[in-house]
Image (tube, rainbow, N blue to C red; front, side, top):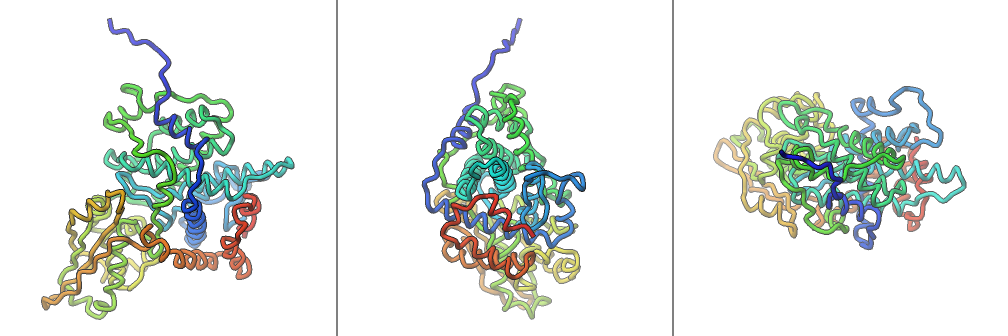
Length: 478
């Protein structure tokens, strides 16, 4: 007779490593802290820009209109004060809405600054509660360190674990990272963080179907907000004594690995430190899926040569890497902005025709231009195997694309190849003035002139890291 003993398992090693880093990890890298400050600045700018779009703002505010929360979480750029769970949803949704915040590319993809939904919400909640009791608040240094840790947890888990190949969405890693960091910020011990993170894995993941044809849609713009809000809820529940699940990952038949990961073991490819923040990719120039950033940059460079010859184009060759072909090589009808900003061909066409790419170019009025679809039909993609190898090389982490236009008379443009986009670590110093300009421009879409100028100078203040979180968040109230 096969008797299965109900013995309590050991805690999964992955849970233990995440918990140890979240609680005890020391962030000593100045480069990581400086980059985290840029990430925060840039992410807030992306959030403010989202407020121009009613499809985004309809998701904001309390779940029940009129709900009041004493000492609630402030939602930057608005007058909302919410509970920390709904605050995380609001902030996370705003940061992610336009696909313009930072990016991480590996076996799995994602946007680690999505975690700021949880980090800013929990930090403001803790700080306001402490100040109300006459205690010291968290500081912006605490926020930056938490941001480095969330980036590291999400990014390191993404290095060798491909959830997309299982049809699972990368926001699972946002939920895991946010749960770990939020629980630690709430005062959780290593055991409590491991318990909370086990709950995030038990939740499993959203399906990627809302990111791909034929179902691409706006859920991809609020999925990260949903993940951060769930993370905060799990952290708060754990701090009230809710149990965890020691072998949530490895339990035979019923654990995450057997149920959802084809029986493969989750791996931590390198020790947790600050590698991810130091190598994060910023979307400096274009609000577009990151695998298309260099294609958009090449297309914009070609625009002056072809803008008066659009009708003379025979074909457009896009040389790219395997991940881009798998994710955003998209032909046929595109049904909404979410569909268009994940189309390599649409993004390239906009760059060629208009010589720029903004969030407005994904809207229906621009997409109605018949030149766009006509040009898309003339495009074809080719994989460059070296591009694919360099994409996965941890020393290069390139995201290369090349664009060439061939005309009906047989003439052709130069084959414009760009290996590293603006925003890559290899172009970091070049990127900073553009990131600052991007942030400054977004401030002026939301705030009065004087307040916008003050909010821009805020990130130049040498005492920035000492600022209380509650004071920082108050400055962004409209």
